Amino acid sequence: MIESGAIGAGERMPSTRAFAEQFAISRMTAVLVYERLTVAGLLHTVPAGGTFVGEGPAVQRPEARGDATPLPAESRIDDPDPALFPASRWRALMRDAIGQFGRPVENPGATARQALQGTLAKWLRGTRGIDVAPEQIIIVPGRQQALNILAHMLLGHGKRVAVEAPGDDRAAEIWLDHGARLVQVPIDANGLVTSRLPRTPTALLQVMPGWHYPLGATLAPERRQEVLAWATAMAAHVVEIDRVGDLRYDHHHRPTLMAEDRAGRVCHVGDFGGILRPWLSTGYLVVPPSLAERAEAARATGQGEAGGIWLGVLNEFIESDAYTRHLLRIRRIYGARREALASALQATFPGGQVIGAAAGLTLAWRPPATFADAERLATMARHCGIPASVLSLPIASELAARVPKTLLLGFARLPEVEAGTAVAALARFHAASAGNDDRVAAD
Image (cartoon, rainbow, N blue to C red):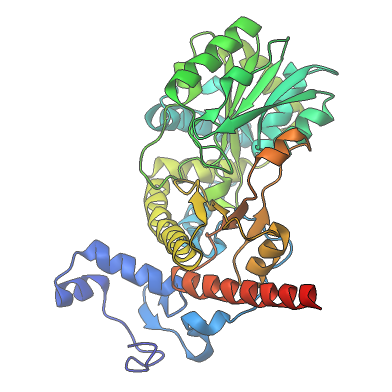
């Protein structure tokens, strides 16, 4: 009705409660409908004023994206949608925090950090099964800082680090910067292939057991035990990276390796970047008791006490249940976008395969075998408004030849109503490109 003009621009919409009563549906369904229409640009909300139909050009039709709306070159595939940031709640918490200025507090940064450590200890116990003391949690600006702390403590020139292949290439770069020698261990549908773990002295194993980025594999139970046994036998530490955090769509958190570790070999790394970026990327490093004092000293040396107000606001955001409510909201929205993109790909490109879509903000897509040029296909996808890149290994090796050509596609900033149009545009681009190649070959 909005698109046809039956409901005019600027008209006030009924409240979600009235909408639900009118159509005899649950209020949650009405809220979800309004959220999707808002994300699509068809509605906008005025605080304390109501919800209104978009004005003029602000009303974006699903077809308005067209065949070529390139994404900014600096966009990351797994960037969240900044429009979904809980700005109103965050502003209110910031006002409350600023209202504390001038009160006698000896070290506000340390106070905020310690409060957040306690809150995260409770959160990790309830959501990840990790039972640790607050002082075992090191608050850092993001995952990269956590990995740097571990590298500083545990690595030296020439020490071996085993990494998943394919895996987290940014983490691999950090290990290399600290003089490590990387040993690539392949993954399959059941996660890390533990039979390929090195049998020579190794300092670290980097693994993503709960949800492997980017291929979405979950480490099988028997392999989890093999990893822990290997770490104990090798006197190695395991760096468990929780890349997607709470952004799961099957509502089932896999137990962490740290929760099962009885030998104090596992360190757990996580952050809030996938949910609150670009405004906040605070991360945390959870270490065994034997490493807690050294890790905190390394953090203080590199970071100091900056960012106390942000840590205090994040703590209150989690403590007040605002984080839980925000998480439920974005899971619904991102889940719908993920499903829309995956369904459009499967319907438009028979023979392709979507994998790794149970968590995070990306899915991995293996195009039909006849699609030879993955780089060009990724470029076409970006021109159609789909964040895309070609999967690469951390370091070139013989493994590259055994990994099928795979595209990583981001769905966080692709509205649900635009996914089908964008994929259809990609199909037209590819068909036209293939036709040009055939004509060139004939000439």
